[in-house]
Image 1 (cartoon, rainbow, N blue to C red):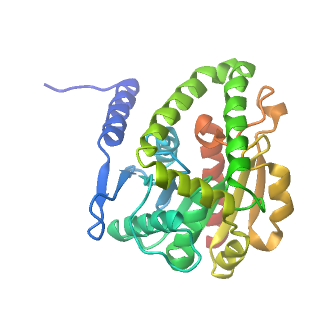
Image 2: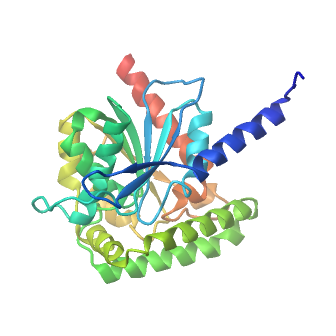
Image 3: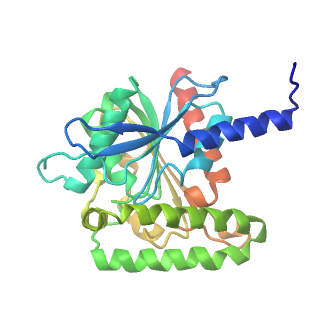
Length: 307
């Protein structure tokens, strides 16, 4: 029997396919460290607008499920999008002064690139992801064409575990309060907050590693690393919400200088978002605007390179 599909039905079938991918991610296990694994969701649209694959790399306690909407939008925009979930990464040995908590995650990124046989990638990464993505890129700069850092850690100067924890709690409280200021976004933000909390609880199955990661966020600085990445030819862009309480904008602006980045974008002006100054997790709480902004940045970089 010939089955006819309307556009609505076709979109529903695509939604089912997307849900299936996130419900059953690929599992990349480490031969060297049994039990270590990385979840991967690889969405490769039929009609691609660029041949450059995009890695979506999570921040602390986030997983592929948290970034499902970001991945969906990128896919709709014609990008092959590979979202990874590596709560504690791949076990490895200490190397110099690099925090072991971050080195494990950097190794996970490298392994995904190798196993997927990706010659070069663009990357968008959030929060703590800035630390281990930078480590991975410094080890293999030829594999990274550009990195968009959203609310990146490691760029606000001297910090402490307890001060960071206090600011993170304050930011979460602000997220909850801001839901009422913008009713049209309320349902989506509620859903995303719930998803993020559920996924974060999975991370605490390894509390020691989780605490090590928080300490690394507080103690690691990457200013000089960004300078080196640019010297190696990697494009570096920062997008930072003005209302980020975890990593305050005013502190970041004092630390980030022109030789570190190809662009610095302040996002989430309260005048443009219904009285809401976007907070630290805006990247996945309000994915439409941020994902489309990242896509425009990557398209612009690609156009300049080809002109």
